[in-house]
Length: 74
Image 1 (spheres, rainbow, N blue to C red):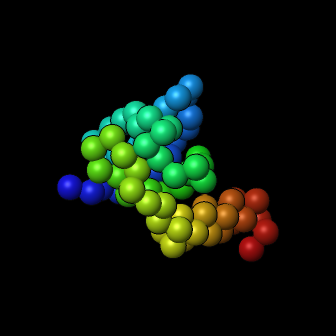
Image 2: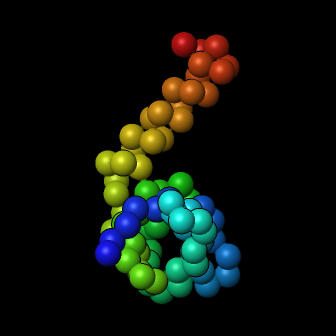
Image 3: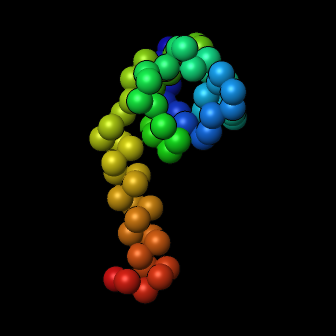
């Protein structure tokens, strides 16, 4: 079953994903080359199936708005 996760970081030959069930490791060779930290992805087993660009953009915009409020820019 495919599930959503966020790319947390890279460690050697692995991508560490933050999932609803905790952290998991995916081999870099089982992921799109353009996967980057903070991106929302869909994965199944030990393979990243796709990057959810729309959800990634939504979360980035939300984070940017929070920082602007904290810094008093809006």
